Image (cartoon, rainbow, N blue to C red; front, side):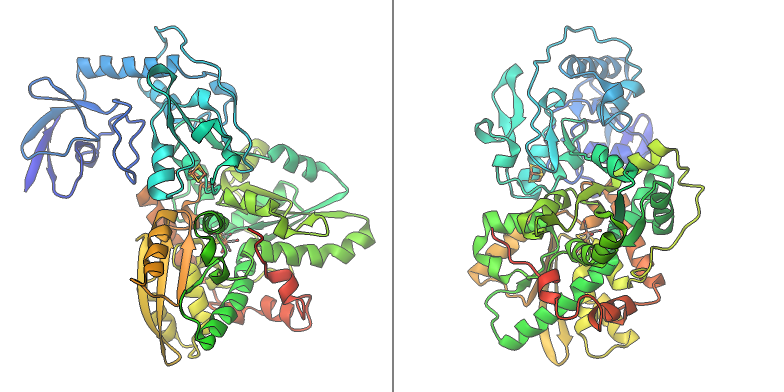
Length: 564
Ligand code: HC0
Ligand code: SF4
């Protein structure tokens, strides 16, 4: 085996792409700011320097390991070097840490603490920069940017959007949309992945917590809230639970303690989506029109991406609203008469792992008679802030159930939150043979797993179905090009804008790939524990369609025609 000697410790290596990964494997975490293992290596921050036998300084993130290499990670020179870089960065950085949203989660702040910095010996070189809050999802504050470039790379390489880039040279270099535009004037799809990788608060998620608190304290308002599938496996991380541990019951309890009037699970909306989307797929397969597949429609960043980059495929995107919007419409209808009787106004909120949902909620297509079906979207992280602020001890509270009459959802609804989940849920609905074996066949067809592109061929009701599952818009972009060129052919394609799906949405607490894997496993565990596996077996859904408020109103309440 190949090996390196790191601070006197022998470290075997094999597939590791760079020295940094080998160092990690022996339990040493070299400080880094611009290294994010899912992206290409940029090597901008020079923080991860190590020293070789001859005293050369090497950037460990961008140097491949060599057999029998000897390096040291902690020497007087390295210590001096790291402190100096950090001081230079801090000299050019706004230092209002105590009132910064990233306080205690900022990686720059963390490093300053870790290296014991107590002084910055350089004059402040920061130029005041205007804040860009034009987007409904994202706020850019260039005065907090350390030019690590992670946002630029995620937007270009992973998402194929390219809404932001470096501009200018030398000391006036900044990250900005082209031609000094505001973010809202670009083709940004509001996926928030730039904010998810930003180590500081230079790109952050826009918050509307002030307004949410005001609604909660207003006696004239009935504030109801739905919680998205993927929130359950990530929120607990902020309170010491392991990634992937399902804390949905505690989340319901905490939400009630915060003063919300009713709490629901978006998985009910997902069950509704499956009813409509599976029907649409069935009809499409019948029709014989198979030039393009049916694309899923539940991810709003994907919809934006299709509108801006592939408008010609819009007719092939499912007409189903997302689960959040379906459920939002149902809830507004459900409370209509009650509101009149009680002289109240129902405010419909959603807790989402996603920041594009903030944009979806304000789209004109989801505003009926001047009233939006979803009034406010907050992220998992914003709910964490509310819980912290109110002093609720999340680890100590007991789990509760969601409110009647929408208190039951299926396992199919839960797995919407991982890549491949929507497809699996739809197939469970479509397959005629409702057996444990058919559940298993679908599970092992190739649609599960962490890969950004998955393809599956499945026998369904006597015909062969070709399925594509992609997460990350760059993967979607490549797949669409292949479909257009005739190189690939599918009947159904699921797209989620965030790599791995909603579990890794930009509204979730920051985590690395290993933890995302845990979150994914947690979603499948929750499905396994669910007494109902298929959307059509959910009695709540049955009641809504049969003599319930959806009867004859499916088209109006559950479908959408995007105006582009
Ligand atoms: Fe998702 Fe959804 S699964 S997009 O990833 O479809 O945000 O969790 O809520 O709407 O259900 C996000 C997660 C949702 C929606 C659902 C879908
Ligand atoms: Fe790019 Fe997504 Fe950030 Fe918009 S939100 S700038 S599309 S990474």
